[in-house]
Length: 259
Image 1 (cartoon, one colour):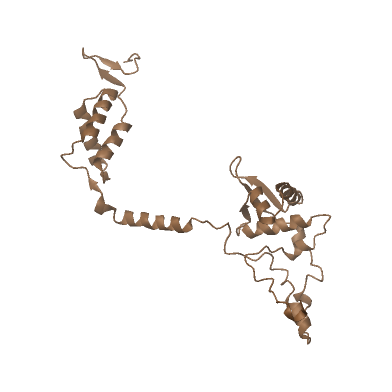
Image 2 (cartoon, rainbow, N blue to C red):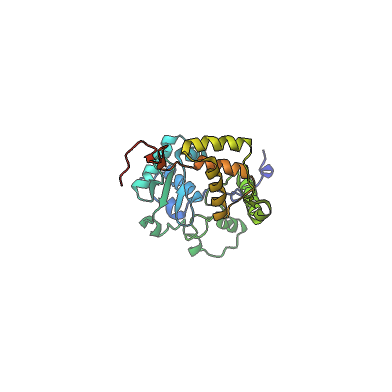
């Protein structure tokens, strides 16, 4: 391939991308490995403006393209030098990280990195192109991204569901009705009514009247009052005492009464 056939590529054309700040680049390898620097940049890409980020080791391993043990070793380097702090919001959950301020961030940059402070006008076009390709000033750091967390694939569905819920609440008065005065349970409701009456030791008529009175008291609305009636019966609890055949109070649990 001849020199004229080479296609020019803009290295900044791919976004989002991992950007490593200049102060981190100049940290000697003896203090921080290249892997730890790359890992710091990847975590910074997902972090929010308050310096928090949640990311699991397998996710980081897949994104950087290395083994999980290598990621753990890089995280240990960042923790040991106190650039990040690791914690878990829930026991056994995904790792969360906090970025910490460090003295390395406030050290003067090397001359080769501190480009724009010592920039001089040039006449040579090639030299100008090379200068413009250098990193921006030292205060840029990691550029902000539009996303502080990985994108959610279900955002569209969730948004649609939220809009439907709002619409239902807005028109809820058109489809919800108060309990009718002459409410009577259907066949299934009657079966539940007899079973509940036996369970709570209460006449069926009293149970039915209690349901109507409670619904009116709390101004309950519903689309399906038969279903609402069954839900009421399922929640109904027996009284602590009842009258036996002789008119004496007894406890349902068989215990003694204390007067």
